[in-house]
Image (cartoon, rainbow, N blue to C red; front, side, top):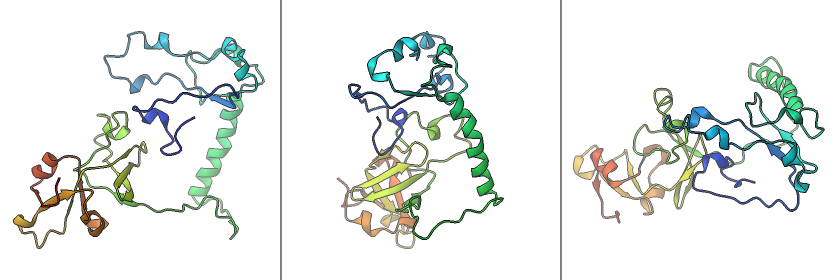
Length: 237
């Protein structure tokens, strides 16, 4: 059970959800311990020992009577081998079926196969095309687990967001779907470049809707805006 948007609970460090088990669990998706996602100081401190293991003892509980067990494979120690022959185990079928699915997607992307879509079938057509925000500076994803904040990735990717709302101004990270509501905005079209007119404003002011998306500059803090040479306007709280 995860929020409908964003869908990745692992990318929402501030949210804790209690799952209702009385009605039973339809599917249990198991993943290995992501050692590469832990800080170096955490490694080797018994994290693996505390990682939950899915085995027959767990699945004996009534809420797991009809549960399908899934896993992306390969496993480490989080999935007991005694479940391999259990009729509820789907991970080998999952791995086998993943191959033709990936083959089909690659063939479609490379143009090796064509797909005819009925005019009535709009089930997978994106209904909303959000405006992209790609400026290199001014705002970063606040989720420390986001790939855009990992030191090993900083050389390759830049922060990028979708503007999903202008009232209040809301950005959604394209990498982890974490949403944030920045506090300050400015315009790159600041009156022929006159320094005295280079102003920043509160994101909840009417100017947020007036500035063209291609001219919009977003800041996390006042200090970030002022470091970039912007001065506060009368619309800053």
